[in-house]
Length: 323
Image (cartoon, rainbow, N blue to C red; front, side):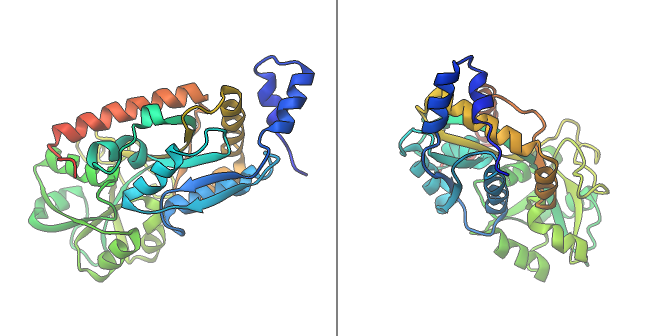
């Protein structure tokens, strides 16, 4: 049976029963379009679809995924920022699109802090560094020792926090990694599997099947804590670099200007589904951890701002020029 959070969410505002009924009837009044600024089948798309399906039990209208890939997530993000701010268009946002791209690319003409309304923080996950299964590199120390300019350190997307994580790791250890960007995670994984590259940094979801088969070996994860699906893989901190923490996250945003009551309805809906045990398990199987914080929209907005400030400063300190 379909459940709805609409009335419960509205009650938080102390509205009358008549006002609650009127608002419940008007929003959402049509299917919600959730723009995913990356290709179908990737980790971002898989995660978005898990949540869109779960929302069918909560909202009276379906959430329809619309993939708009291109330019490291910029195409879909710009499209979202220019949509009608009525709550019926959402952006499935990631760390790169909100906090990194505006500092890295001239094409990212938006300011996420002013052009987007934060809706909900959904998931978080570290990046994992893997090597081919037959590689002699067994841990982070081996990787750093081998990285004399010959280790080819691959990223699926030069705009991602994974790339910046590699740059920060190099700065912390004195290693030299050759950055080889790829247009998609699949191509990068293929080259790692074939041994054409020596190491790969990616989201766990992208490489879990290959780790399980033994084709790739995980040597370290970049987050503050061990990843539940890879409990035997140490963190960079555990490997000797205090304070190192680079983790990706998924969130939902909307074009700036959505009425506050609609943002709260959407926030309550997303927070409800990411707290469900079945959704938590699906997300974990996809390689991400549901955020336990249950932040309100205003708190997510503050989180966005902290991430923007953090990564813009890191990019500047690393001397990375805007392209």
